[in-house]
View 1: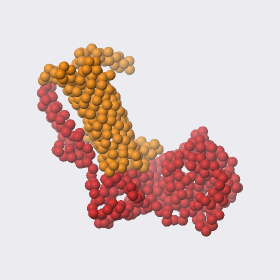
View 2: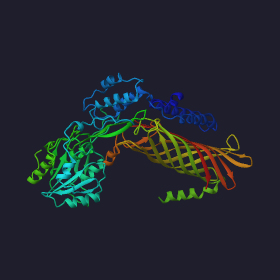
View 3: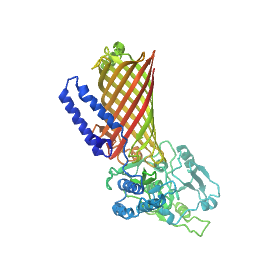
View 4: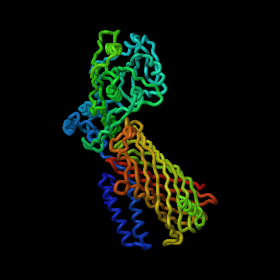
Length: 374
Length: 252
């Protein structure tokens, strides 16, 4: 029994061992209660036994060879990935197919390519294998129309004259409509900066928030921004998490709410949010929440999706794997893993280097003073 | 409340009434640490253990009892086997115990003591590269038992005390998120199933200390070995941390 525990391989060993210790202690106390000899007869061996146990560090489960690393990757995904059923992926069948391609004689690059291809079966932009020589990816937005050209906006709409704060470019466009471009939710938005931006734009008759090609970032920045466009506590969506290694071991959806920021400037006039396939992850979350607000219209293309909060894990060889772990749903309880559809669907004309058709549509909507039908 | 304060006052005024010498020692631990936390990574990391702590021991009731207070912080800087990522573990703890003493057991120079203990231990483990699981919080309040054996002898003409102590928490409460629950969800307000009752069925903590106190005039020099174990399994998460360190101490 002791030798089994010293191997530190599994919880069953630990449970067996603790049960054994308890039985041992009960027996010792019963046999020698009140006697001085209890110290030498039982306590000292008991202490020695405990001392023997503490020297062992946890033993890792997988071998540090090519097959071991492949199996580790497959198991990590099997136990932690949260969209197998939603995407109808038979992960055991995937194992069978890709395991046949792996051998210990492969080079690291060959193994990486096989593992990267296996992960692409999940069709998930949040799932990456990260090695020192490469990052595997499934970036679906690379295959869709770009629908954004920064140069066109800078040159033909802003005349290279704009303000910048907290990673946000802003200006009032002709026609008296405010324009904000936020390129990454990784850029922290200061409440004070946001006050100054919204104060500047407060005279505008409507506001365009451009989050095209914003690949995401911190969800706390989503809350900071959304909180300026609501006037009461608002249901933002639902969040779940894996509660165990089974594919369906998911917690009950937890409803989360955003509240309007107190003592700061809010903008409650009509708002248009511009999105494209590059609007991914936290940006997808931002668009899904903004879409549920009455005064907001989404214009452009469907967002890139990515509604699973990604976690990171690790293979024995040091490669990291990132994967969707905690599904976040919109206020209607729907997963937006494959994107949020716009209210007004428009593509840019790639041959016209002077106009942004999506921005033009947004200006047109604000000028007409109408929100698009949902 | 007044009664409790009076009891505490009586206890603390009786401290120096016994035959044993009161002692406070500042200790620096340095050695090996191994950290396994499946919330952050399935891989076991190992590296350096550093700790700074103060131990105060006071006799009570003419030496029939003693109390002991340990306050300290420890830091583990550990690396994965591939040497391309580090974890940082920073913990603080405070432990208090009262022990019944038996002098001259089996041998006039051998003393034993044992009694109940209470401990509060908390901190974080930080992974440098993880995305939405970069850090995990460790917090544990427990009660348990502790016991000491100390042997008074001489090294040349200098008095020396050899001591072994085991601190063994038995039951308590500890914090753990659910299997893949993000701290963002906890921040949003979902606090369900975060506190867990800890007992030997789901966790085992233990601290072993073996050392020698060499008295040099009014100063005591301490040299020893300390071993810590923290092992728990809950919500399908596994933690198994071990450290082995040399201890250097000086009386205050």
